[in-house]
Figure (spheres, rainbow, N blue to C red):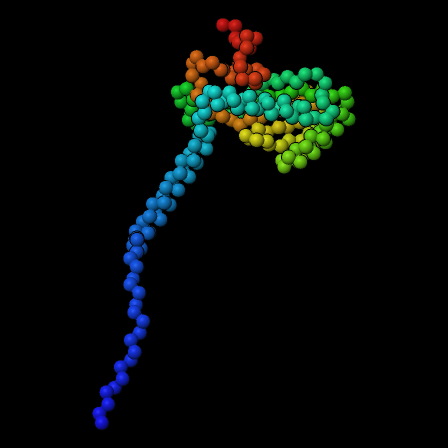
Length: 223
């Protein structure tokens, strides 16, 4: 009897191939486009940083000046023992906050709020105690504290150490013997800031001697 050869059993049916949403070329193109966007954003941020940062409004800068002096006042009262007398902020100039490359045109200018407070202690021992106490407070708040070595013989404030740290909003705070007087001093430096300074603005930092965000009658020029 003639036999019919057995045929292999049919295998499982192949699943239909899913269509790709994007071809390989399209994926490469999208990735390249995203990379370009990121690079452009980084370049723009780099250019802005090179120019000195974004330009703020006069009111924004005034608020930053107030934040700077408020930071100083807060630190003043954190000193233990507290210095004698009422705290008074005195504005200092900045030789580094300048537009060397001519980026600030029109009404754009830049300033750096820097203020100092005289610290009157009964003795140098009180100053050292206050310094040690403040350092402990800053460390407890999570700030990195840098010790400043005592002034060398022949320098103002010989033998007195200091400390410095950077708080919120890039505000640098230093307690040390003053550069010229050698007496204990609290120095607070904000960041160099670009802002619009239009003629007729209510606030003019040039005349805000105590950094309270206003120009009172005693601070206004005579003319």
